[in-house]
Length: 267
Ligand code: MG
Image (tube, rainbow, N blue to C red; front, side):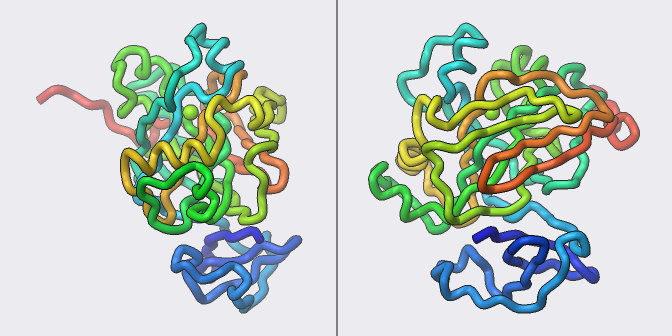
């Protein structure tokens, strides 16, 4: 099933997407209720609601260099264990929202289309063969990155942490095979990334396990599983889409941040 969160008539609710409709559900999909017990309520047309990020995570744990071809593209050796960094929950936006280009600090901002894993229940020290039990579902993720600052800062916090730099959506698909899925990214309609998750160095279950041995994963947390080859820059005005067969398309427009953002000055 496709779980979503939406706004309609000035109210925010969780829903199920079926065809061109959204059915409201009166429960929190992170409460542990088995998916089959979810009851469908009010029906609306999909175009009559505004889809929001399907979840507000307590944290986003992202993986660097998790596709073989992407490591080759950056001339990096294959990592021996997953390389982790974090993105703040305040960076989250949903499909249809704008990515605000931080022109006040960066001149090179890239898209990174990724498969996002959404955690369903608290996970600590979970072996890979049990990881599936802790996953609610999967979503499309764009790990927007200020590439110039990633190199300059060495630490990833600023490059990965600007507001609007974590695009999530359009829904959470609960019936999905993460071991053989195609992740595609389009910039203004032109295909830029297209790779199967079979090219991952560490698969989804290994990642959930590994992260859970570092920090407790909470319901709603997202693991961004790394981007395939073909990353590239975006400019204000571009439309970027991350498409994963079986989940849907996450679509965002890049806007110029100078309208919204103030220049930082040292006191
Ligand atoms: Mg990434």
